[in-house]
Length: 460
Image (cartoon, rainbow, N blue to C red; front, side):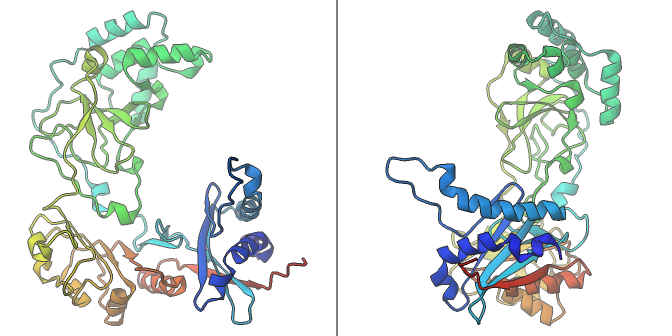
């Protein structure tokens, strides 16, 4: 038996959960869920309260740390990185533990510790993550781009810096599979920004950052910010859309083979030279890839020379793509309903809680680009209308609506991923069973569950 499925790994955690939630566990249907990874956990036990005037100490949480560490040790022994669990009381009064292995075809839930998106097609990614940049005829470097001036300026600011050789620059180009812009070559001819070259001198590193205007990556730290470098769970990524306005400086992409990341702004946002600009941009412009967004980038400067010499303040990102007519949210704040959202450009339709009768999907049947539908439980008048949405790649519904589709054999076969929306407090096991029904339709690995019981004798 695998150690993560050995009751001894769980006993300290079970005691904590039982002692903290005895009344709730004794109630019909009472249960508690959680998730433990090698670096984090959710544990349904209250945080200790220190005496007034005293901060919370590690010792105050030691019981929780000890319980979680035993499960983490079991994960390491199994070569696993995470596990979900559910605790309930069996009819005979014993504490029952469900050890849940989601398997490779299920993303971990964000709201629930159990089911996130079901990955029905192995390796599939949402449409925005498949989108490549559009060609922009006539795109050229900005007038401010001046590699010679950039190199002279940086040599004046960094007279003692150690620059990269032409061979090292060629190696970087071969590794990336793209020719570096002349401005970027000029920068690294002045400094290759290797920590080893500074011999642990933080002041030298700071001088480079001030001279360039960002935390500069070493030459061998350059990377291409393509879509794969910006992963996002399906349930959020499927709601995104690529939109580039006719005058946009930067294409509204997840990533691009022409975004060459060379630095950081100190707050986790990446700086890149953009070789695939938008209709209103310049080849080689400096863009900022916001770490808090999953799509798009902002304009920092028209050129690397401009950024280093003129030091323009801030950066600007074009309008959010999460707007009509490409993305539509129909909910209590939007009285237009599905009829108003039914435009040929529509890609993503989200139906949330709203007043009045459940809505019909008839207005959006046949729309050529509709690929994502999410519907809050109880909002659809007839779930079988989904059969008319032949281009869906992601569908998220409540359990009752999924039941209608399953019983009718009407689950769209075009789907690459699916979500189960749970309203309020529902017992997790029926949701896991429903998820397995959907996974089985695509012959995907199922969620497995091991049930363990113990009376947790306090004299042990």
